[in-house]
Length: 253
Length: 244
Image: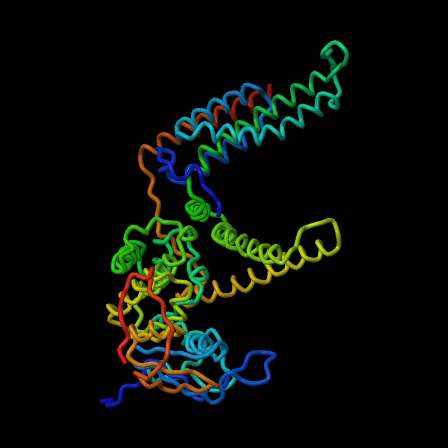
């Protein structure tokens, strides 16, 4: 099962139209990811923190998610200052590191945290199902939306099926070791999971046909925008445009 | 004027075999379902589920035909019409519930039948509330318990307002409470149905007649045939004696 920690609580952002949230999250991500200045990054971080506060997310869980991201950026901090080249500076008195390397690592860390926070506040506050429908309404091809929705629905069932098989192997004394028998057993388990999933998908398709499915999904949630949502997301998007404009202007100048 | 009313659905001279098997499951088999409440019983592999799947057009027999309201169903289009009037409850509810939330899943059928989202929502609410599942609407389908999944998948079919229900081993893996609830629901339905089950007691409580499928033929069972059974009493709290 996929725990959707953040989608159960309630706030303005939770109730907001998922289409607006997707558009805002994608715009913030694009602008921040393309930016080259700290000022844009810092503005983005402020915006993201504001959104996280607005969504009233559990700070503890947010911190844990950020920790996961920063394990990746930690590797950049370990490598970039030593390998980036360019102007060097002394470090701890006995070695020299690249000044630009440090700057790039800092910028990447800033951007990564900013984007993750924005996504936590905007995307994880909607259940996957409504994101799926919203993506469809935004013009994503129907097949991709269905792939998302069905993966979400059945990934837990497939994982249960695999666990059932591996339990069956374990109770007959199977302990994984580094040998051919283990590899072969795992290959069998994966293959059987694949076969079972294939059969299940066939049965699901039959169930859909029996309920008169004709290839088109109809949604039960025709979303309607409220005036407050439009204003709030208007303000957010204006902020994003200003950041984009600033970046563009700096690039020109 | 037509004096005689054709059975709702009928299979005529059907021969069916699975690929790679020597002997056909059915050979020149005939069976018809009237507007009634019946049970079907038979050993594993006798073709009970296969029969239901042939009726619904999920499996195509080698020979013979399926008749719906007296007319032969020729193609997929014909079966699409048939499926609007006949609902099939699968053995495994996980196969039947594919939408993220209960309300969306129940509304899936009505939406396909061309109802507007508002109408579909209303029909689904009504169906769920008739089954005593009103508070289930926003629940996520894969978080339901096995019994809840079974009841919700029954709701998904009832929402399409069928004339006939086919239930494939509905009491498999159900606890006592859900089983009793299902018996109660079925007895209060103003609807014809056919139930496949190994659960004699369940069939006795929900159907008027029981048929046996064996060796590719359907025969009617005696209603109150004498039988021997083993039984246990829940928690031993039900003192009673057996009369001779």
